[in-house]
Image: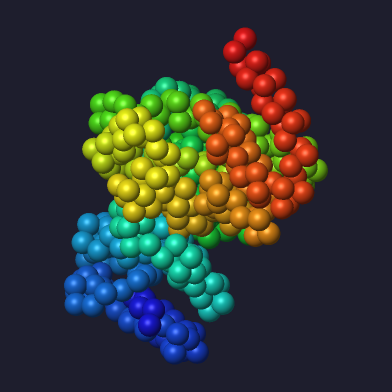
Amino acid sequence: MKRILFVDDEPRVLDGLKRMLYPYRNDWQMVFVSSAAEALQQLSQDPFDVIVTDVRMPQMSGIELLSEVVERHPHVVRMVLSGMADKDVMLPSVMLAHQYLDKPCDAATLRAAVERVFQLRVIMDNPSLKQLISRIHSLPSVPTVYTKLIQALQSDDVSPQEIGRIISQDMAMTAKILQLVNSAFFGHRRSITNPTAAVIYLGADTVRALALTVSVFSQFDSRKIPSFSIEALRDHGMAVATFARDIAKSLDLSKPEMEDAFLGGLLHELGKLVLAVNYPKQYGETLLRMEQEKISARQAELDTFGTTYADVGAYLLWLWGLPDPVTEIVARHLEPVPGATARGVVAVHVADALMGKDPEGTLNMECLSAMGLIHHLPAWKQMQKEAQSETSR
């Protein structure tokens, strides 16, 4: 039975939730409490899968509650359900909540959001993966890009387009800004997958608050894991993203599909950043084993963490509410499955393989053949050579 804890200091709101969600009583085991203290008591007594809380509450706010949940019960998925329009109050929850829902919220919307969490957990039912992801709520950025962003935001006349251009150079910033803009808090009904469009929609002031006040963006500390280069990760991500978009264009995919391929390519190795930042010792040992034993990153990560960087990245992006086509690309780019794979996944798979050290060994020829795409390979290889030649000039 799925267990969900609802927290709101307004009795009328709790009563409304109980009535609204009564039809789901056979699917969910729901507990309703009116304070953060009661919520923490419930969490200490029984296991819960999801907590859904308001933000502004007396004694202990929803933000403070979520902070405690992160520390004491990191495996619980954290969701905010609030009617607050005050960005100064809401923005701190960006660091703590996985998803945001706006009041008033109808039963279908709330159910869809919660069921999406459970669907993800079924698809990626891996205890090791859940444990790895449970404490993640922020990711550090490439130092030079971070510095460039901070300098730009300190200028009064910087344009949203310039801010978006800077953010698009960094996978951590891109993931976080898209998580925020696609949340219900900002009321946008259509998925936004472009960092510049996200900044234009949010406004420079909101992004400035995120960076300078709430500290959503942070700088990567290379001293923690000297053998890991965040700059190399960034460069590879940008190269794969650009090449994947070109491949998608060669397949006559739609503009949204090309944008998904670009974003999926940019974020396809996000899981490596998660592992390197949060488990530097283990990830450093993993990199060493790859070098010494000549094994793949996938095998080394499975041996060390019980999961792969692709699953880690996809789980986090899906939990943050990024569009399904993008999370599918991140999840499946290593091993596309014939008959069950979108062409955007194939575009990133091919781009990543051809940009790697062992293209022939990593390309899934069976999948390309089964999907009738194998005849494109010579042209794609030529495109890669030309792109590499342009870069080396």
